[in-house]
Length: 261
Image 1 (tube, rainbow, N blue to C red):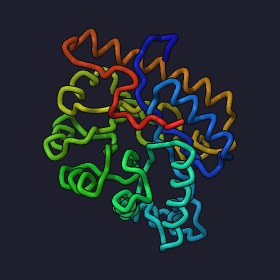
Image 2: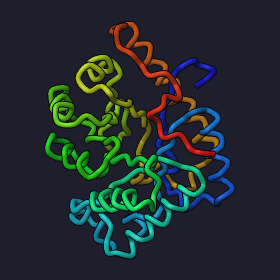
Image 3: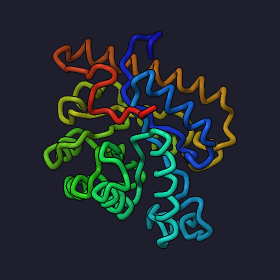
Image 4: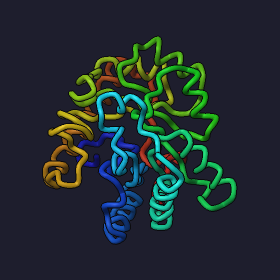
């Protein structure tokens, strides 16, 4: 980010699960992000793909979504979030709408600090204005719609809600291999405030080429991170060249959920 002089605002992190990092690793990560003034959206570990119930991995069962099964699964993921809150993190990825509602109820009771934010994942599968409104009503701080939406469809989401939209401008082949770099200025025009999400590669979390697995080589992920920052620079340049009137937030703005370290 500093080398390329490109603003990076938030990182969606440890998608293999925060559970798989020990406390010293999490503290080091929180400290580094705080010093860089980066918002971190952590992915809590316990989730349906870890469960012993295997309907999710069947071809038809996968269509029923990634929601949690039973109260114990909810308790586990909330425990993982609170573990990370205590370390200093203030942003978390959410897939299950029931979980989102419960987490925001815990904010009301003071069990979770008020400055914690929840981002709804693309895996929740939302892509229409009514769904966007439901997520905002339940307490979403931002949400990631499905990636293959047209500009008019994206504009309809903005008409329904005022929370930031997380837009995949590059997405893995497993999701369709979307590369929408030249649409960036128009995506900003119809969707701002928005964040661009950059995830090139063969697959995110499913299949042989999945990148978000704990056994993926750390050096490969580091190199991949550098590539994503390069793509962010390209997006930034395209926006400035085609729509110089567009304002890009400065790094470390007050509305970011930067870790408290």
